[in-house]
Image (cartoon, rainbow, N blue to C red; front, side, top):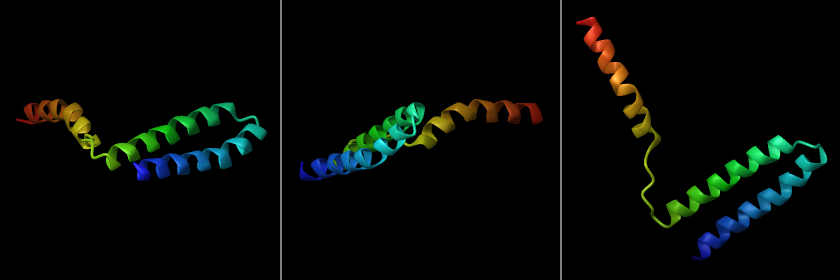
Length: 77
């Protein structure tokens, strides 16, 4: 529980350091993208800390490209 608090605290510090600089330069799109990635990173860190099973991105890539691989193999026979 304390580690979760520290992750959220570090996330808040990062946001308070970078968002005012971006806001000063009127970079609204960058703030939105930065916030999305920061929240995603914080959520993944908390999930790893709480030992949730997080699927590997390679599973999705394999799922997408294995039919394409099978098609190429069948075409070359």
